[in-house]
Image 1 (cartoon, rainbow, N blue to C red):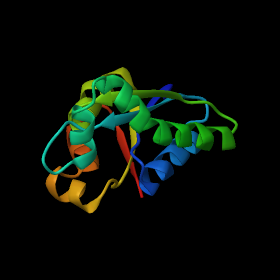
Image 2: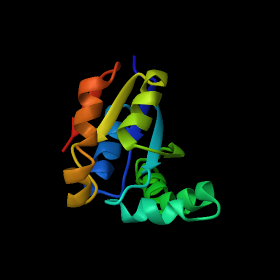
Image 3: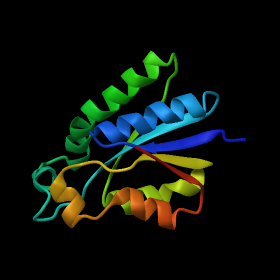
Image 4: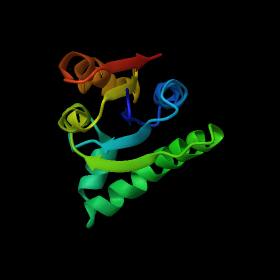
Length: 139
């Protein structure tokens, strides 16, 4: 029985579909939405801006508030609640570091900008191939 579900979310439509799927497929599970604020690189303007902030954690929380607010709103529409958390770093690495605490991962098939997909790599594919727990990729 699946009791703990991790749903990594960015601000993409696919991530929202993944959360909806998780809420429908696992209505009795505790669902945790994780938003990872990327680490600085020349290709990631938002992350570079965050790296220049005095309080990186507070800046990351503010950056994530829209995504996590939307996640809570989606959960409310299913008469459910979700736990939300923010992390800093490489999205695939952060997600893979946390998956063993969950029974399964539900992730959108793609997300972020075209630049993110070209230069950072496909996070969903990395999770799918490296996760020690089952992964559902939602389109």
